[in-house]
Structures are given as structure tokens and as C-alpha cells.
Length: 235
Image 1 (cartoon, helix red, strand yellow):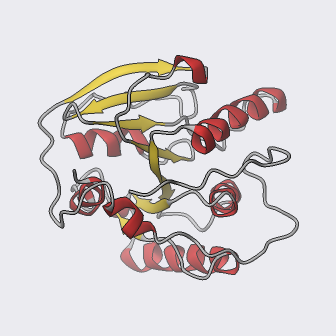
Image 2 (tube, one colour):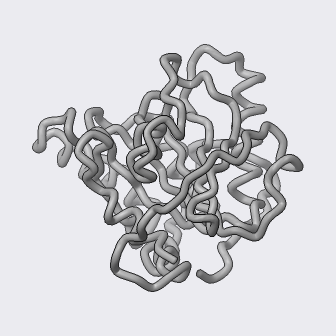
Image 3 (cartoon, helix red, strand yellow):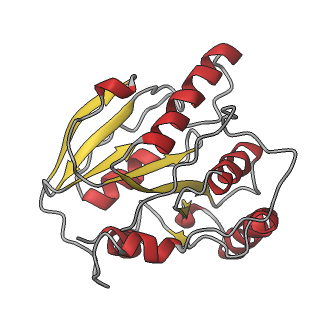
């Protein structure tokens, strides 16, 4: 894949909806992801191991492995999705306290690339100071991590567009970060409701970009979406 644009912002606005919203040309995300490989078939996961969890950028793994990050609101089903993708139950801990984790967790897949589990956003119990610190940490990682090839943003398909999800998507677009939208928990939502929520979400972000990001519907329970996600990351 080519270099990911990493603009230097004059002032870090973590996950904020900008007052001025220019229509940006979003990078061709599918093409950007496929530059990592060039296969229409999903990879076979032969190994998946936990590397480390960090709270500071200087503690991140000093490797050249390509990295793909996953992020979403608390309780969006991110850990379950990671376990489903790797077919390794328990690899990512499914917390009984959504939003509890504050680490960026690295998993080495097939000894060739890192799956990066970013902390969930949208938690309400943390103080404003802690939220700002956490958001700045994640923002800094996404904008400045040289190994990062793209971001998968998880959206709960059962719900109408949530403010925190939209704010983060807006931030990704404004920062020109290649990303894919994953609409999770398809098995728990009625088909017509899931489709309507997805359409409403895409309409809400359409004013920010000319070409909308790619969307994948997925379920950790029945494995739907796994083939499509891994095909995008295929070596």
C-alpha cells in the first residue's frame, strides 16, 4: 500500500465535529488496503499471539510489521470480532465492563502483521481530563504510527447513528486516514433495521466526502464479514 497521508494539525481536535466541513476526496480505501497484498481470497490464520498492551507511544513494538487497527464505541463487540477473525477464542478479552480497557493492544498475526486493538471511545464515566488524554493518545497513534496501513471502525448495526461514532468518522475523513466501516452484531438486529441504520449513517457522513468508505456487515456469532475483512488484509 502507498503512504497514508498523515497531516500535521495545528491544534489536535480529538474526535470533534468540525465547525467548517469541507468536502474532501476520501482515499480509495479498498485499493489502499489491497496494496498490502493483491489476493481476492481471505488469508488463512495460522497463528495469533498477544504481544503487549501500551499506554505510551514510545512503548509500542519497534517492528516494521504492517498494522491494521480496530476501534469503536464501548460494547460494540470489538473483542468478539477479533476472536472471530483469528478463530482463537479468548485472544482478546471480552470485558464485562465496556470501556474499561485503556490500552492499545498488539496481536501478531501469522508472524507477519499486527492487529491493533484500540480502546473503545464514547465512555461516559471517565472525567473530561481523562477522556481528553485518552483521545489525544489514540489520535496521536493513528496519525503518526508509520506502520499503520488503515483503520477498521466498528459501528453497532442495531442502533441509529450515534454522535460519538459520527464524530470519530468525521475526524478520520478530515485527517485523510484510510478506513473501512464495519457494521457489527448483524445477527442481533432485524435485517431492515440494520440496513436502514447503515443507510442513515452513510447519508450523515456523505456531506464530508465525495466517495463513501467501504462498508462490511459482520457478525461475531455466525462469522459473516470475516472473509471480506481478511481479504482486505491479505498478504
